[in-house]
Length: 276
Image (tube, rainbow, N blue to C red; front, side):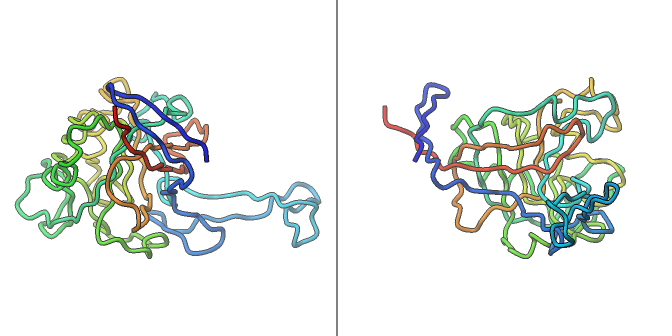
């Protein structure tokens, strides 16, 4: 086993690298897949190049597939402020990112009820939402620790969400703007969630939680207006039931795509604080 140690804010931590905790949904071609917003599944087909067909089963010398997918819609993905703006630095310019001290918390959504959302956003009183109070309570035990990444697991955990089709105007819980302000106040620069989106699927295009996270004014399209333009959001992750809430080391693995989003693989490593 490789043992890692690191120091932050004057505190000494030890990392256990032997049991990496994979938070990514395995995207199967073909097979059961998660899907959000897109009407079709992600696909793979053999490459055709002249007389070559990239499938060993068809007699080719090797397999070579052409993949068709929308990162935002098919599986675990990481996105940046370019998702909402023009002239923004893509993921390739913002990654790789350093390992980060991360807090994993579990929350159970509540009905929106009388909570106030931004004018013009579409919502229903029965919508399941993640609120500031829920996050603050879940994180209270670790409020004084110097984590800069946050992993949010929503309850109840359902293994079927790894291949769920998220259909309709509100197929999953979403974050209120006030909840996102709490995350911003905590100076979280990498947010990992097991939801298909921070916002309601059909919110009228407001994307208020995304905008709050990146520090973008309503309707702003200029990346230079983003106060937190280097922060990253990872959606459609999957946190195993057996993983306890608490502090971990986050290794966010993102390919060098010069795009607003890309498939990604967030990995957690257990840590413990060493006595002084």
